[in-house]
Image (cartoon, rainbow, N blue to C red):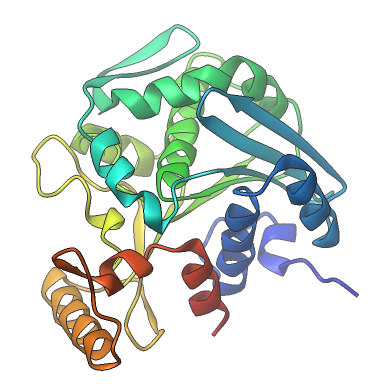
Length: 277
């Protein structure tokens, strides 16, 4: 008999490895064609699934009865160049439903992507009382965090029942400025669990820039599969170097001038397997 993660059924907002693995699997399913994805979701306990797609923005709202999940499609490891190119876009104010937040800026391309489906998706996620989780991989994670931020911005002047439990992202790039990061973790904000696999290059993007800062609580998976919620940058760097050297010693080689491990680590399949270990 299929048993759904207890943390999700209880609507809990704190981090749980089993819940993270389940949501990583849903993020993986979000890459599939609609019919294939629907079959996979039903097999995992879904009672209903509603797909949203416009231009290059794709997500699915899944109802499991005791909780719901919005899973965004992202960009896989072989699309890393496209991710880097996309991150060169302009910034804009965080806004939703005609309400904008002064001083809070986010990536304009991400904002435009969520805007495409906002009018169709927002009424669906705002009309039910069951706990809502938002998830996504890579760019999909960024869109998920931004959706949560837009909803919070929208509801500060149009409050409804708070059913947004948490966001789980996997290999998520930076989305906005320091003010956005502070807004996400503020009392009116949301728990964002930012899961990062040791050498995932996408999670480092955009490379050091005063205009972008990571938002959310880091859950770092080291080269041995251990998850650290408190780990300094120096310890991360040491682990990343060791992981890359071990990968090269195992014969993984290079892709261009970069070790293959930097690309392989971004795969949502790798995230799922490591969280299941």
